[in-house]
Image 1 (cartoon, rainbow, N blue to C red):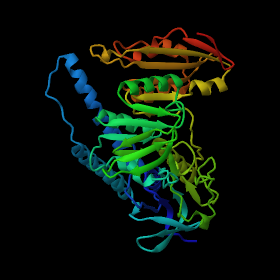
Image 2: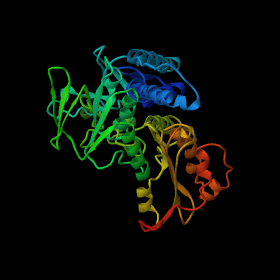
Image 3: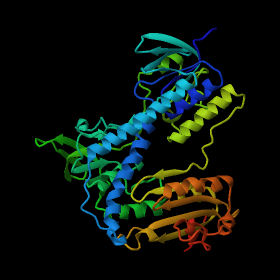
Image 4: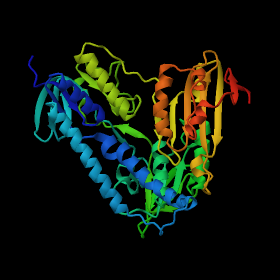
Length: 463
């Protein structure tokens, strides 16, 4: 059977674009459709604008500390509209690069919604026509949960909308204390906004190492961020003055200019026509895939956040590369999800690679744990009491380093570099044999010679 395309990709985010571009570079006929803006969540409404706003929010701290280093300056001022405009210019530039990269490799692009109409058919909404493809990749990603079951949810915003608020609010209440909620709390607090976090659990960042999240909790409180745990929203009302009245499950009432939901994400699979091709989803709407990203339809694959795997941009790109290798280069390749470095761009930031202590206890009989807490040199001349934490988790039997966790300046950058030796299977002896770079915060990683405590069969036995 003759098809219009060898491959058609639905979704122009990082994973979809990489799959389309790499396949086209091999001489295949490729089409891709994106109903919003090429670049997807990461470039347009996620990682990139968020990191730009994180940078913007750190300048208030720099101004506060400058006097301790001999600088004097007039009282600084912040212009929200200038930041929003600069952000928009940058993501528009990146969007153009994504699209030009596709066109330059011979990919035919469509600025429209696309839906399945069968195992080999894709309907293009703007043209109201169906095209055919031998293979189809679904890479439509996800969207923030709007908490539609909540009375008054329409008075709240999601992270997508936080980047383009018409005015910088004087106050904000954020529902959720995962990495998105924590990052935006740091951003708004750094920009001078009265910030409150409401979280149903006992600890913020529940999926991260306990020493890091405990210290970050303290840091946020010291920065003036209010954290309310063991509570959820019961109702939101819009008051006559335009502010939001928030009722909590505890009975407490909050008032704020803006309410933001940071309660996880959900896949954009509704109305995609999956049933027409026999593509199955789980109970939450995520597309089911095998080890090679193939769906329950033999001609259709799914990549990135639309599947219930690791929801990170580099992971989606990696899955795309594995798909291309498997289907077009005769090199069957499964995505490798082991030892993925991650970061939380909080204030201060978190960088981590490998296993948390809780995970390592379940996997290894004996662990050596090295833990350091200190005031970074950057703050020694200031009044700031921010502390840095470095933690190394070692399998006692093999002495292999199985996890490294950092809280402090540039923690994310360190985690990316550390991911290389940890992925290679380095041992604690390799760390000890590495010469320290002085003076630096990172030298602490290679100068912790004795375990802070040991764990045997899940219990701390020493320290």
